[in-house]
Amino acid sequence: MLNAHALYQTQNPEKGTIPQNVTSKKIKPMTKNPERLTGRHFPALVPHNKVRRCIVCSQTKLQAKKRSESRYMCGKCNVGLCVQPCFEVYHTKQTF
Image 1 (cartoon, rainbow, N blue to C red):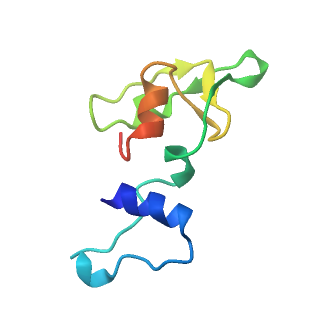
Image 2: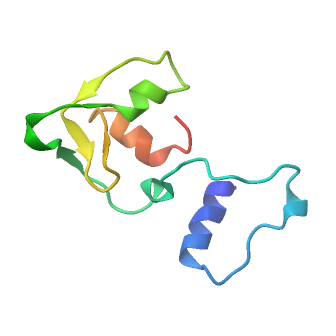
């Protein structure tokens, strides 16, 4: 429901927000970069032949955390990501 509302707000910013009496707790953003769930994102090589830590592997709640380095990143979000499956997970799931 929150994903639908967030998407609706990006398309209709002049409309109001969810009234606080609808939910028992305050709604806070689940991500620092809400644009990661919308728009067009493509894998890119990390510049200068370097590597970055995959943000999904290192911050996951779905499995044991691990340190995984990747030569790929999302150019639009500027975060390191394993191409498969982390790139898709990062751009489609609210939490990972």
